Amino acid sequence: MSRGPSTPVGAFPQTRMRRNRRWDWSRRLVRENVVTPDDLIWPVFVCEGTEDEPVPTMPGVVRYAVGNVAAAAGEAKALGIPAIAIFPATPAELKTPGAEEAWNPDNLVCRAVREIKNAHPDMGVMCDVALDPFNSDGHDGIVRNGHVVNDETVEALCRQTLVQVEAGCDIIAPSDMMDGRIGAIRKALDAEGHQKVLLMAYAAKYASAFYGPFRDAIESKGFLQGETKDTYQMDAANSDEALREVALDIEEGADMVMVKPGMPYLDIVRRVKERFGVPTFAYNVSGEYAMLRFAADNGALDYDRVILEALMGFKRAGCNGVLTYFAVDAARLLHDG
Image (cartoon, rainbow, N blue to C red; front, top):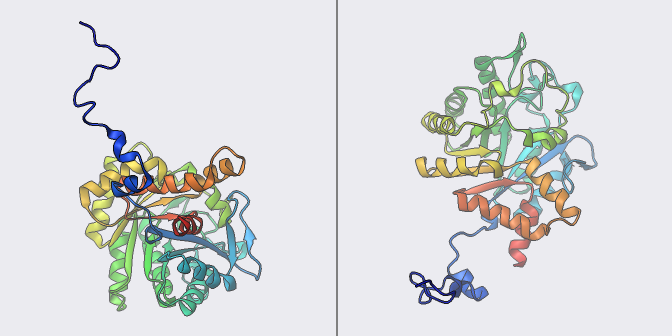
């Protein structure tokens, strides 16, 4: 006899999954994941001068004049955001093939760190370690004969690390993807008495097209010379390789690991978290921000709802935290909600 449309199948009607979804309070009671301001790191761009500068490809994002960055950090701190990450728009005249400005103790990054830590000593400050903001070749490492050299770059990254830490940086985050740099940086930090400084490795950083607006923001677009970044950043087709990269960085002394980009790589986040169980972060990168923001600004998406849903996706995948340009807006919504 054929089943009618009302004939029970399996446990239905005794088991009705919709019951727990019926009310707001019941949905909150059974919720498996939660996003709070504690999960957010706010990436901030800094520039020379006295006026903040809008980033056209990232609506709502500005480069903060170095003297204004402490006030911006204070706003984030008041919303409960625990840490801020600094990225410089280095003037073109200070960019050189050797990227020497990277370890100038008075460069933009170091001055911004001092401004923030002087005003908010209990707020975490994270610094990117890579040479692309300072390199006239536009690469994360030093270029010799058209090739990004690994070991010489690692030596430069150690020098860059030390000036950032001496300025007050709490979390060193190497994003360059040179082999062996985590171990070398940990050794350099410990040798100078900086055992308490945290290392967050960009352990699985992919050669991605989603970084475009970021390069506009730090004014590195158009500088790239020689080989492409595919020679040191990961191939988007690979996931087993990501686990090898993460394992090496943990072995070399990373306290936390990061996957970058974020939204197209949440499968990598899940594999990393399940395999290693270490504090795992993802970077909700500039291209991800831009596509959601442009869509929302043009009426295609509900901005408030979509950013919280996107961040929940990171938490559901296994992230302990997320670097996101939505951090301040999201924290406001979480407070208001």
